[in-house]
Image (cartoon, rainbow over all chains, first blue to last red; front, side, top):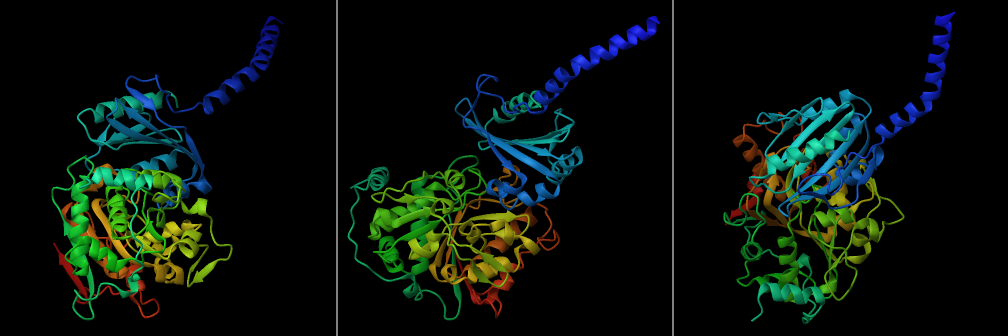
Length: 165
Length: 331
């Protein structure tokens, strides 16, 4: 009898909490992955985020878009950043249908000199760029200037993006 | 004597007024200084042009352009060379390429150097129109959209609009920007040398993908024969005559996007009229660099730029890909 009462209360509690949990899940799924100015030391976000659906991706990376479409890209978001008035960078966040698509793109672009970095599920870095994947998301960050500061600054930016995924 | 910065400032505000003497079209161009039957391609180098990670020196780019254009035309003075090339009273388009983002786009220093010399040769600022596929690509080239006819104009093809009717040649069935069909009398092609994961090489011929409404429809079968077909559409074939190829920097693998780990500084301009010969030379340069870096040939990588041979074939006749018929001049 007592067990039945506890069981009933548990079901009631779960039912009551479900909408809140669902909303929280939606919020997490749609969280803006782009850190704002002031969220990171030294980096400022210099323009609005642009979003391209798969069928419009050619408008952003014509010539490169096909490999993303074949790997199941759903959308690509991009924004520009600047660090200490010295380094400009572009952050591309590709939302794929599944993790295998993100992995496929990431591995296809990996050169022998890439250094593994601890970001998301897997990642690697060069002197002026970082690529990592987390679940079905693939992130590529590219700096336009090579300075002694660039690798460290890029890594800080990558960690800030990762934390928002 | 005005310095370069003053000149550009005045040009931008329309203060530079030059006589409009109406001159030769490009058809009358540039034949004296090449052996008969050969297509001339000038590769002008300056090893000090572009250091690692730095923008190229503007004055050095202008000087290199002068060397390239005088070597190509045979004229001793750059302004005289330009006068022999361009029609004075017509609109001249400069087709840049900013697709690869600001990391690998036609350099602003080159675009401004061409615009500067055109004005000194007698072209009104407003008769120079810099264009590319969209405003984002133009921004990558350092350009700001401007419709003011008293200054060098700049706007993208999607803003100018496309012809309602499709143009067709072979496999290419697209709508062409009105910038090409209606606004420009002639177009100077300013591509940037890059590897291309589908086409293999992107340079003179491939840069025309930026003048159509849906370039992605032309990517099948490694862009062959679409690149050649597109260049056979009359408005493109006839109006695009001179190419001043930007090989100041280049991406030798992973293109057409910007991959800084594959960035390379040839520090060169590649000038010619024969777009097939230009692409043949461009392919050779990229192939050499890839070999240096231990990368497979384009053939081995499964993306040899076969559209170049197609462009040279009897059906297309856009130029020659035969090295024996290319007069390659390195300066």
